Image (tube, rainbow, N blue to C red; front, side, top):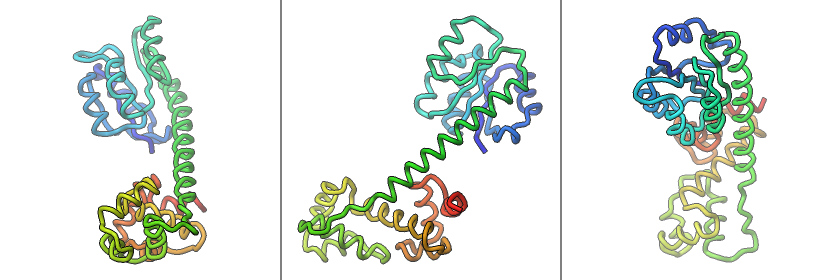
Length: 252
């Protein structure tokens, strides 16, 4: 479900949007409401919505100003509701990347149709983004065969021991270089510190196992160096954008 924030200063209109719209059919859930632009800014920061539906004329801060302050940062889609049909408002809305501009009184069927298309576009964008992230992770290999440097030795050590408990201190002892120096050299070669490289490599192996070895999630966690299942799920979601179970479901 996509998260929607409603910002409207007229209580009757806000209540109508809340209770007369079939949000679930539109693939959305209302995550919060606000009655002016200042409240809206705060709510957007707290909720990080996928979609913001807002009036233009409101006390304290209008809808366009709210969008200017928050849309570039939180990357949501927006629908404008307004009783004012002047071209200037529509022009400003277009410049802010607003997806639709609906005049009051609101036609709920028109709003539902707008949401349906918007939801489809957002879901497609999310799937595309997740696919790109997964492809990038799966291509993460860092082939250092035939290379004889401290950093290359560090990469080989990590690849050979990623499924075990390893630390930078252990790597330092194995290679015979201080922890600070080996961390610096590893980052120069790969772009990542020891911990970052190790975690990223473990996640690539986890993705491969989930896709091709038909293992249970806890088994994948154990065989990729994550001894704590919950921690593995948190890290996996951070890197991939979905939980291991969701990934399995999408891959089927």
